[in-house]
Image (cartoon, rainbow, N blue to C red; front, side, top):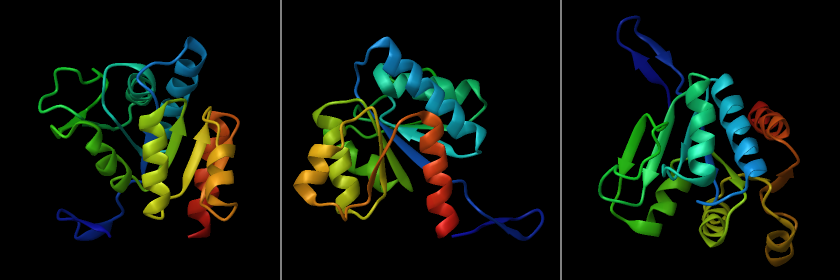
Length: 174
């Protein structure tokens, strides 16, 4: 849906919102990958949306996007922003705990699932249930494909650069 620039009276397209989901704990290599992914998302002019916390994949991806000059949105489980990543420009405080995963997914145009646990798995399931395309990066997708079948909108990527290429290809088709 176009946004209208009231100054010029021309419709403006809103940027793509890329949901980056992943665990609150991750090793140094996975944090570097998440940081790189965030930076590449920002370089495309896309908005990075994640769980907003100051740890793990959430903090690392927001850090990469923020340092690259991008917009970051954090959908927090808490009623305040006390535990928000300092790299989140727009904190959304829900007070909903894990139920905020639905907001994460439904507010994203496409979901990238990085290394994580049950919370990330729930976001993958919610995204697929709601017809969102999911790209995994460092999250083993094969069990999900075995469970749900090969026709689901889930693709695995080997690198942050591959994630960007997959997103570009998906939206070129649309």
